[in-house]
Length: 377
Image: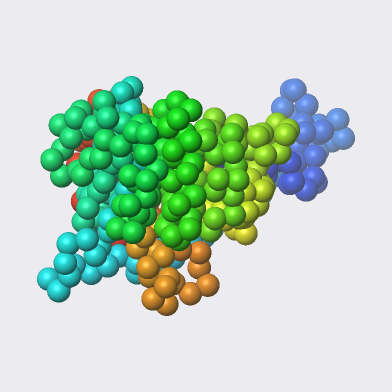
């Protein structure tokens, strides 16, 4: 338990500690000469009562410490329960399968200014266990993204006149879609992204919305509102913009759990992940806190690792649910928790190796061992 938590406990204990006679006597009766108090109590007796009061205070502090530790244990227990659900959705590796069965993921994003984000999302999906990862980007971003990795399938169609038709013909082959990494805010690209989301909803494909995809949702919430296979992954600023767009009033930043519940409900109980010191995950009916230890290092691109891995886990979770493996549990919650835990574990492991110089590429190198530690051990 850290010093700040101990200080909070001590203050709380002092606030509720009943006024003890022994403490009152110690305070009122002991004079500055240290002999007899004004009412004639021997100083040794007064000091003994004061010591008893201190013992009582220490005892109460211990009670509160135990209470807080029980809360931590309860949170760990909840994390373990959900982690076991994540383990249950991971498909076994077997030679009986063919390429593509364990996941074909599409990334909508990548423009001249932003080529790293779609790469991070796509390669993260592969590293988690997807068989194929597609990137649908603008023409001038395609060669750059291809040069990052020969393992990605890159389609330079996002800014073509018939972009929606070009992407739509691939949708029957994709298991999930991640919209937003490196998308940019050019109106024509946002329009294409919106139409692709609509086409994906018709096909019942899980859709993860991040980065500039969230900018689109802020402008037009109806594009994903109420879609139960949709997941939004805002950081605090993105969350604030979206909350205020729907509620037309400032968010109460002092009660984030209540705020995420409210926003999810306003969005038709869509699954929502508020990234932060602890990731808050909700579908409007409950809030799950992912507190897997990460590090103090926040490098650009780790949100793309999150969204890419979540795209694959969403496919696995919904496939498991359809097969009856997840009963009375929202598959999107399971997928979101798994991706949040994995990203934090990758961050922790990369930081242990690289410290302050940790980058998202370092985190991606940790995906295999982090996944094994969390979900295959």
